[in-house]
Image: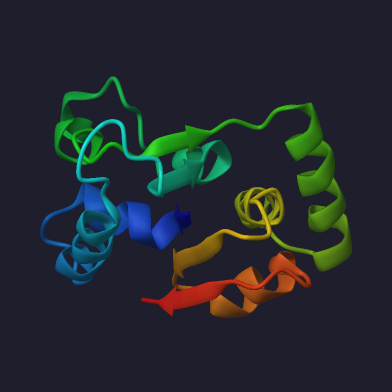
Length: 137
């Protein structure tokens, strides 16, 4: 399975068609889109803390375009919150980056994990020993 995780800059790019990275991020999301609703081999996710940081309100009419892309939310449940809190403390990163790290670390080891970000250093830091491909914007 390939999981693409969006960081704040990637969400900002998808929300604004005039953003300088819009077409590039959209191409990655479209390439990773399942070919049908039953396919489970590819998914694109956004940690909830990133969605908040990027001001992505799914109920807003302005979000209609990005909402069509079938990007899944990753909630901050008890296990994820504990892991993110530890990463926030140990790595001295933002809450959103800590949630990205928790999302990375909770993926199955066999998964191919890709993070689209403007801050590759923080992503590599919160990924720990987990193999991750970073696409820098």
